[in-house]
Structure formats: structure tokens, C-alpha cells
Length: 109
Image (cartoon, rainbow, N blue to C red; front, side, top):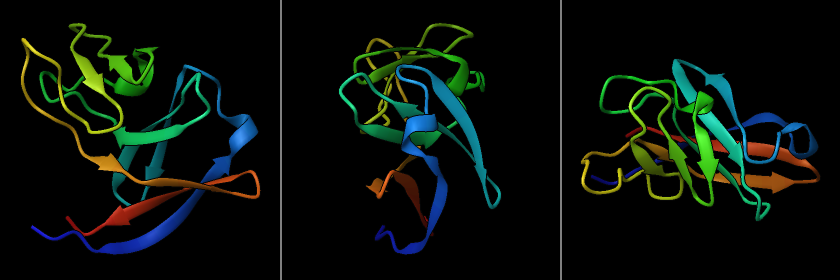
């Protein structure tokens, strides 16, 4: 299915995002988990583990992965894929940084 960008939304200042910790952000009716990684990248994913709905913004971050706080499922914050032996995925959102402002792109998927 083709994705169409329907909006680019300001979610905050880059410097206000804690390094290697998650932050929950609500955009329209979507709750996102936003992460500023130790390499400086900012990633945004759906804030709900596909297993039992754990709040991913409260999970531990290691490299480009977050561990669900409920059952320790390991999820890649770049592609949203759950790592084996578990299965599943979460929605990912493209982020951009402009003049120290962080934006997330919301699609109609």
C-alpha cells in the first residue's frame, strides 16, 4: 500500500529530547514514542508494543532498539520490526530536524 504524507508536525526542540530515553508524544489521534539515540538520530514509532501493548516510550534503549518494559521484546526503532525469536512490527514515522526543531511526518497508512 502506498503511503501518502498528510502532515508534518512540530513535536519539540531537539535539545529537549533526553538521550537514550523515550518520550511520549500525541499527534492527532496517534500516540508516538520518540527517541533521541546516542548517535544523535531521532526516531519515532508507535507507542504500543504489538505483544501486550506495553508503552514503548518507557522502555530501555540500546543502540537502535527499544526493549518493551512489559516482556522485554526487542524492537528496532528504525524499521519497527520486532527482533527474533518474537514476531511483529510497529508503525514507524519519519522525523526531520530543522533549526533545532524536531518534526514528525504523519501518513495516511
